Structure formats: structure tokens, C-alpha cells
Image 1 (tube, one colour):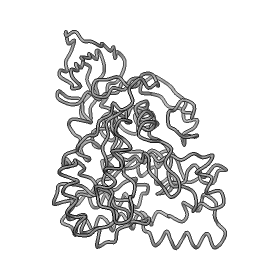
Image 2 (image 1 turned 90 degrees about the horizontal axis):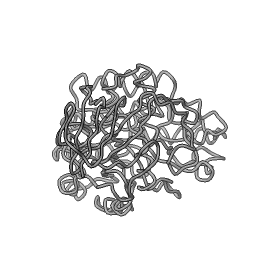
Image 3 (image 1 turned 180 degrees about the vertical axis):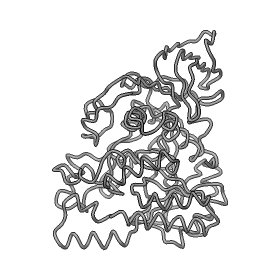
Image 4 (image 1 turned 45 degrees about the horizontal axis):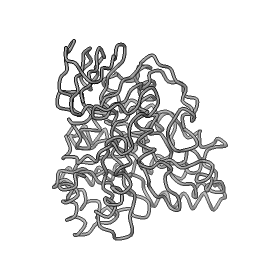
Length: 459
């Protein structure tokens, strides 16, 4: 099948120009002015921006957290992603049984996603413990399975010690992979949670107060130093939320270290005051919401290139039900919040329209840099001859008020209820197929493909 997109304003991470795009057999085959070819489908993009499809490299679909499971699976979650202008995700697999091998969760997650996802997808490996067998299995994960990124945690039940972290970092570097890290100091959290709970301070705000900025800052700094000791192993800091963490990243990158950082819309648009509201349980996730000064610092970090990507950490649970487990204590509330559909509109409106970042930077942090860091580029995250025809049309003049009712996420709230945005995706295309148009899903269940990723591209 062939498709011709005409008269659009094409935007990449580097360029902006008017032109036509010709697509054949899922691939962009020609870009130019007034392409004369006939096509099975012709799309008039006059007055619209044509950008590479959004890539969200931090989602948690189907994940099990204690006794509850995220309310979005690989069908509902990717439908929501598509309607919001995202054409590919890389999902963080949840923990498996104690002592399971690295392939256990890969098989489980293929079962979750195959035949259900409507957009293309990949997985991050999950590292629960390190021994000689796990280090050997990493080679299969990176080389054969096309999973060059794996995530480790410095908190939760399957956290790694510094010794294990060093072994993992070293091995990932040898294989051409990258280590993603959830950076929080576990012992500090344990101490502060116990301290507040003993005093009867169990309201949602104490979730944030039990995880102060230093909890993240210490862990970020520690991982940066461990990565250096491991021979400057590539390091990816997920969901950065603090100014102090950013300062450590700045120092590392300024001295040439391969440290990359991701932040999320919630840390750019919301503050810890949300946790003081009657519905504060909606906003319990980790790391927690911070203060305005942290949000301001993160925007500067994006603009200055110290933060390379914006992902969502989409991990939804129903407020009327699962989140209510925390009604008597913040410690019992499932950690996570929704946001997979709102990312592109929020970042365009609050970033580009309000002049915080250029439209090229917007494309870079939401599509191109995630593709490079995760081993998808240039097939994904770019508009060029030979790239997959993953594209999104944005109407820069379309004004929308975000409410739960217009979204497709399988959850009973949005953290951005009432946000007014200007600029909204009006068409989403994955490998040449239109799968969402004007806020409605028009694709097919199971259209999405698992993408084997290659070694990372250094930025």
C-alpha cells in the first residue's frame, strides 16, 4: 500500500521545512516538494506539523505491583498511546519470581503483548539479582533478543547492591548495552517511612516527605561514580525529579561521562501540593512530586541538553479501588500514575507554544533522542528515506481541555484534569497505517510489532 502526505510542515530534531512524504510498504521512500506520484491514500497536511511518531521508553503495562495489576494492558495502553501521538514504546518489564533467569520475564511479556499491541514496542530487561549465570545470560538478551537496555533498582525488594551494580554496569558496557537505574536510597526511605508512620503521619504528603530530594540525589551521584569505576559504562537515569540529581548529572556530562537522563511530564507540570489535596492518593508514585524549583530546574536541564528524553512512567491504577488501599496510610497505596496519552500534547503546548523549548527540541526529547538511546534510530524517531513511516500530524491551533472523558487510558482519572492545551495530534501513523485520527482509534488490535533493538547510539 502507498500513502502520500502532502503540503505538511515536516519537523525533525534538526530541521523544519515544507514538503511531501511518499510511503510505500511501511517505509518512507521519498521526500520532496510536489511529489507527482499517485498513491492509494492521500493525506492533505496543509497547515499541520508532520513529526516523527512519539517514542515513550518508560511504560509499565500489565505490571503487577503487590496484590494489584496496572489497569492498562498492551491493548488499552497502546490504544491510548496512539491517540496521543505515540507510535512506539519500550516497556519496563516487572519483576519475576525469585531467582528466575533473565528470559523468564521476556517470555511472560511476549505473552502479554503479542497480538494485542496496536503500536510497535520493545522491552527493557529487568535485573533482580546478579551472579555469573545472569551475566552470561545478558549476552543472549542483548545480542539475540534485541534487548540492549536493562533496568536495575536501588530500592524495592529486588534492589541490587553496589557490588552487583558494578558487575552489571561492566558487563553491559562489554556487550554494547546500557543500564537504566531507578535511583533512590533505600535505607533512607525505610528509616523515614518508619519514622512518620510511628508518629501517625500517614497522609499522602508523607509519601513525598519520606523520599526527600536527597534520597534521589545521593543515589544518582552513587550510580554515576559506579559507572565511572566500571570503565565509563553507559548509564540511563530514569524519571529524574530533582534539581540536586540534575546537578550531579551536569557535572558528569561536563567531564565527558556517558550519563543520560529522562524526566516525565508529572515532574514538569505538577508539584507536591497535589499530595495535600483530598484526592492526593492519585499522585502517589516514586520518585514523588517535588517543589516548583525542581520543575524549573528540569526545564532548564531539557533546554540545555542535560536531560535527553521525556517519558511517562505510565503505570495506572484505579483511584476508586486500588489507590484506596492507601486511605489509611500512604505506604499501602500502589505506586504509579497514568499519562501515556497526555505526553505529546502537554509537551507541545507547555513547551513549544509557551516558548520553553523549540519545536526541534520537542521532537528530539519526545522521539529522536529516545530512539537513539534505546537502539531504535534511524528506523524510528526520524523522518528520512528508509525510516519506518511512523508519523504524527499536529494541528498547532487545536485547543483541547484535557479531561478523563476524552482519553483512552483504562483508568478512572487523569492527573492533568482541566489542563488547557494548544496543539494536538490529529493523525497517528505506524508503518504507513493510520491508526488514530481526530482523537479516535481506527487501527487494528495486534498490528504492533516487537522491535529487536540494536546497540545504543551515543549522543
